[in-house]
Image 1 (cartoon, helix red, strand yellow):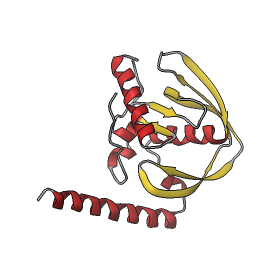
Image 2: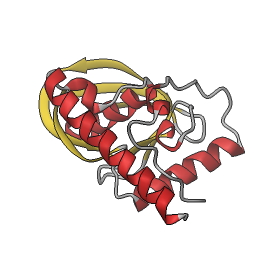
Image 3: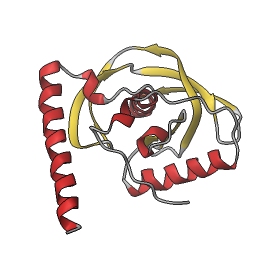
Image 4: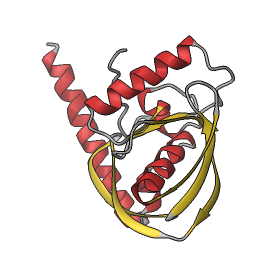
Amino acid sequence: MSLQSIITYPDPVLRKKSEPVEKIDKDTQQLIDDMSETMYASRGIGLAAIQIGVLKRVILVNVGEGLVVLINPEILDHEGEAQMEEGCLCLPGVMVEVKRSETITVKGLDRNGEERVIRADGLLARALQHEIDHLEGVLIIDKISKIKRQLVTSKLKKEAKERAAAKGSSRN
């Protein structure tokens, strides 16, 4: 296993759509292990492969009920609506109110290639939806008003420029 860097906004890779996993092989297993180590080290409750720069449809979630690994996940059904504050490892320091389905049914493959169907509600449903959004290039800031989004994105872009400038000056 190896710890990976989490890509942060405004990196354009976060807007790309992830490709289906065609074959679960040793590279897929290594990806899952790397994602798991990275998610736990970052103190996150979920991670999509795209967040570490891998455009594959793989997500991990652990909301305190054990690690859930889903390859090629898809939402089959959804019910209700709930609004709650969410953060994202790709958007450091950002917390926004996001409306999501309250209960969902998700289908995908586990790390052994076995089909799994999960009916989830509460935080698990929210985390699964959040990570599946990443696979489509969708971020939580896409789910807020245009004015709030402009405020958040300009702040994040400014911070990214400052980090890049600090890295550049530390090399001199």
